[in-house]
Length: 147
Image (cartoon, rainbow, N blue to C red; front, side, top):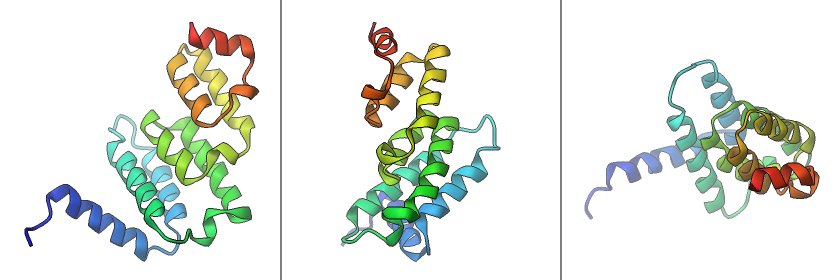
């Protein structure tokens, strides 16, 4: 059998690492928290790890105990904070991994309004849509997003 291409070998190693972790969700949040202080860096490595963790979780036959219920709430709060402070490349994997459409909407709505005030209409509408917040957003602001 021919050797795997480098990107697939890297994915395989990442998945082995995820499987060996006691709590991959907490580890991801810790890694993202630690990397936030590195201003000016390209967040592509963090986004890649988050996307790979998302793929790995989707491939698991049974989600771990931290995937639902009360154990997920504090993780969601941390993920929302990272989402609102982090690069756009983390939006999709964080929403999926931490089921952020079910998280406390207040901080996310505040972030969407801040994006709107900064003129970042596309980012605001994408985030609002991904988190299914259309009904919670002011109808006039949604109209402004779309024009």
